[in-house]
Length: 231
Image (cartoon, rainbow, N blue to C red):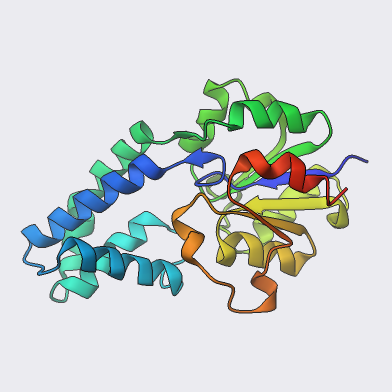
């Protein structure tokens, strides 16, 4: 049986750096418009502390809006800021995200030797990027939290993917960028793990042995070579 590789989407296969820049600029200016006294340097420091210290879970950037508001504005403003920015962020995320440049070449290459799947908290809108590039045909299993009803790091979304793949867990590899919701649960279940570092979450550091990936790569382009060490 061929090894089965499961991928996260956001900041693993999908390049979100343009959206991160837009998000930071919009949130920084909005917070200051509402009276926050935070300069660009302190904003980035606060944001990075939240990322590094696992202060938000599986909701990603939208949860970060509320947390940054609570840190810089009086009580109750977080709900207002969230309402003001929600539609704008969701609309512009769809416009600004793209696949990493290497993905259209790497995925067909890997499919010759491996079975491929998706385990992601991203929406179907993000997953549609694969369709636009005619890459969805290479993925035998796609488990999105919005369809499964559970978000990573809940083991149930991983177990659903494993069941759908009909593959032995010892034959499965998880590739993702976040230690807390990708690497940790996959390690706990007995999957092999590879962490990607071209991500906002690269500043995370393992807090226990279960968060230590088997391999770490700077870019998805390194994946074929790293996989040769797992075979």
